[in-house]
Structure formats: C-alpha cells, structure tokens
Image: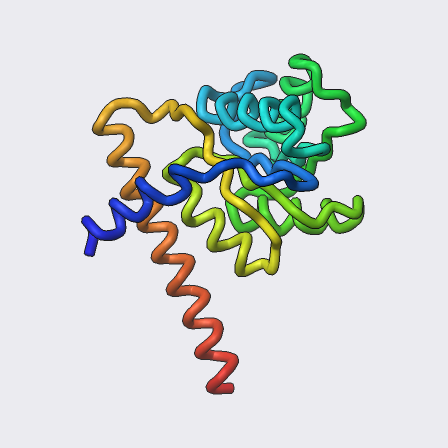
Length: 186
C-alpha cells in the first residue's frame, strides 16, 4: 500500500500543463523574518512565472505569521513577488491560515470577494495530490501547477516529505470519511 501511495504522490501532476486561470494560489510555507524559505521561494517564483507568461492575472498568497515578531508568510511572499515585477494591484493575500486546508479555504473566500473563479494551485510536487484533493472538496475549480523544481533534492529529505504527505493525506481522508459517516448516522 505504501509503495502504491508513494508512486501516486510522486507522479501526481508531474505532466500538468498550466491552464489559463483567474489566479494562482500559492500555498504558504516557512519564512525567515522577511525572507521566504527555499521551499516557499520556489513556490513564489513559479507563481511569478505563471503571471508573467499570462496563465493568471492575479496571485493569491496564503499564510499566517510563524511568530509574533515576524510578518505573515503571505506578506513576505507578496513583497518578494512585487520585488520581481508583479504589480501590487495583482497580488492578494490572506494572513490567517496555518494549514493547507485553511490556506485553500481562506484563498477561496478572498477570491470570491474579488470575482475570481478558477485557480492554479502552486506548491511543491509532493504536496500537490493532497492540496488538489482539498481544493476539490472545497468546491474549487482548481488545477495543479507544481513547482518545476523542488528544494527536497536528497533521497532522505524527499522520502521524509513524501511520508509526511502520505500521512497527512490519509489523515485528511479519514477525517472527511468520519464526518460524512457521522452526518449520515445522525
């Protein structure tokens, strides 16, 4: 079972071509003060590429602050993208979310307030399967747009991230199943 899951996570979205959409939703990741982590930077750079190449007209950055003394991840990302030529008028951000599910729910709500309906979800390739499952469960018209590069390069770091993603995917799926069952029984 683990091998099947591992292969499905590794190959999910691998050949996904960008689909012209209203906005790219960049899922939050760590930032260090006013600098995005290497993983987050790859996500932001990919969203900037999508914007520059006309696949999206807006970028939505997600993520709360990691500590009281640091700016929210979405603010760090917005400033980084603006520094690479994306006009602030085309950047939206939400600063409340801490998990993938919250990232997508908050981005969906923000997008709705701005008339945006279709999305490219931007994240690390190994995170894409879970992110897309959540986006579809939230009723979003979303397409995968994994970063073409990953900061998880070594075998050990990739396997740890993969195991983490499979665990979180299975936990999410089990929680959804339990909620549906509880609604049906009650």
